[in-house]
Image (cartoon, rainbow, N blue to C red):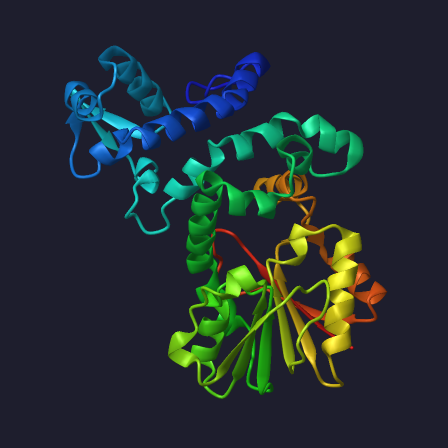
Length: 338
């Protein structure tokens, strides 16, 4: 039964085209960012002629492109001028939480081709990226800055969005030393140590990564150690694995966790910071789970899957902490001990 206020049912064919056009919407936005169209609307609404002239674009095609972005709520038409909506402003460079690096990254060959070959992952359970790009994901990032640079910049933005909720969610007071294993350039470790002045910290990652560390302001309390967590992990009262395990298969995680266990003493703790998939599964977690497989060969995990990984390494999962704040990319803190 319908009433005058009941919206008409959307036929399945129409729903199909609504979601399947997502790839075109992505590439449209990528092109508008790349050609400078989005930045042209940063300050005030602009006409098609003004934007086309400033960016050196075909006027009629730009008009048709902005007509489509208006249907996507990325732009809004005001007379003969176009303005960015709140959604569209997420593609500006200076917007807090900007997704401009994400758009630039998602439009590259290194992002597109692996997903175009998802059937390979579906058949093998292995990374489509390594299969089609000829090298593992992180090796590719180092060699091809058109993907590597926006990837690193977008990861830094994600961290700025998530980290403020993570540090106060955990009690660091019982520990004297903390080691951020695979801690990148040390931004998270720095935040932890600034909030806990009693701590001494160790940043541990590959030589090319820690060479650009950000711990200069607290270097009297911090030690920078280069190495691979597949080979060894420095000892500390608290070991942190933030956004590390989801990069790897269960077999490789087993090696990382074994190295952590070898570095732990009675009373030591291991703090894993990652997504934890829960029922009902949200769309973002389901996507990232497959994306980690396609790009790197990893996966997102449920609480039981974390429990099993830890048990196989001789560790016990003690609790899962949910930050009181709810960041856009929700991470959980999984605490484990010997």
